[in-house]
Amino acid sequence: MTHDALLAHVLTPYKDHCRYLRSAVVTETAGRASARCEFAIAESCYIDDTGHLNSVEVNICYNQMMYYLVAKSVQEGLGTGFESWTLDDFRKHQLPDILIARFAASFRRPVNPREFSGEMEFRSVTRRAPAGGSPFLHADTAFRYWDAESGRCDGEATLAFVNVP
Picture 1 (cartoon, rainbow, N blue to C red):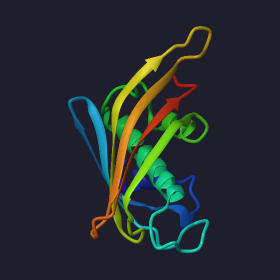
Picture 2 (picture 1 turned 120 degrees about the vertical axis):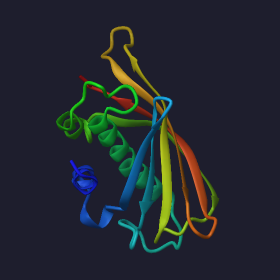
Picture 3 (picture 1 turned 60 degrees about the vertical axis):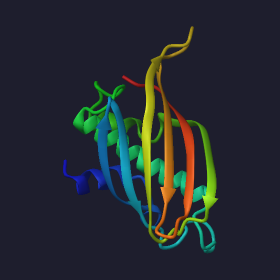
């Protein structure tokens, strides 16, 4: 699947005015997959213009960036944890089974939502099987956003991939 087709596939669940991810480049270093992305928010999907990237949009952009990174990792066999997945598995699990267990963001300087960049990486992806519970993938991630005017936001998120093959 081409980049544009994969991006369209990943953004399918989003309403047209909530598709903020414009492009992404995924790389792998020392078994860790990461994505560098370009975003544009012409108009917030839920509030009047604040003039800066806000926490809700940070979370939406994180989701889109993370979904693309997972899909590309599945497609290219990058990183660990998704080796047995297909793109059909990704689509099946995208909304119901990829959970944000913890999310924290720090705003250092306001980020212009009209045009900004972001990146995220999987710091670790491990399979866990709690006693008496169903196995799941646990992923620690880090992310950051910036713009041409030195705006900056960064954070960390923990993901749980449940009902996984």
